[in-house]
Length: 422
Image (cartoon, rainbow, N blue to C red; front, side, top):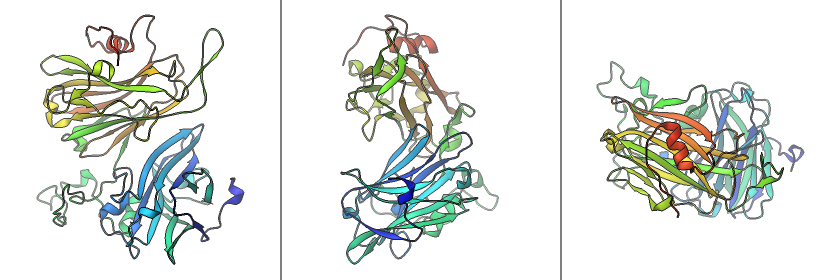
């Protein structure tokens, strides 16, 4: 459905209570800031607590009614999708507000911003609103679901905020954490928030701290970040690799001139080479069932193996930062186990989510070589600092050399390799 079917601002349409996909979309390109979708679940125009805010640091609502599915960039068109199940919205909630916010610029620089609501099962478009005329706004309420006489409706809102996601969230009753550099003010004896959070008897205490709206995106120009300075050096850090196939055939063509098909049974494996402070080295990978361990060396654990291709969760690995003194360096990489001959035409995003501190994410960019292995990120312990470096290096193994050995050679790890299977 094209923009000519777009709803006028302020208008509303009934929506089915069945599962819905809410897609926020815009055009990507040079100088276009990144944007993010989020949602707030409201009672009388306010959240009940910070738990009613679904955004990049808190991707799923406790009720299961709203969750972030994630961002995809396909041929210059970016979409960030929320999955909404109105049947699971708690009776007290009257409104679900749907928000877009920018990171590193204003919506005046973002072309073609729209929101559309799809029936998740049918894939049909239920509603669409194209937001136009933005200038300095850094957050927008694009639309909202609201109850009316026992049924749900969608309203096209289009209300902009120049105060960003922080200002918008604060208006709806969210307690936002101050930026970390503002913490050690001379009037404050400790870096704790000035208003102590209410006691939370339930475990885990999700609302024990104010909401943090910071995140870090690594790029070629700014490829590294300090976990220590982010305050993210304890607990388990989750490493996630998510991907989608951009089109049916990959751009890499073999010498015979045949396009290499990207099969739906594409199997990517997230792996890690590690070197510990005592000099011991090893690999964590599904191959050979070397899944590692979180509470004993190497303090890295692969959370199973996603054999289904690009599932909602992708491939996940956990690194126990409570034992960071044992780490010298960790190289996270991904191999194609089966289903394709190269990473060409694959859109992949890597997210490192520390238990505390901002999530760190980056995209792999375009693969232009017949690569079956990609070095994703290098984590280095300098003794005083834990640094994450974006690598995003597509490597091409020589004939007869395994992807794992190729990574080892490239980074000078110095391990002995024997063939393995899973």
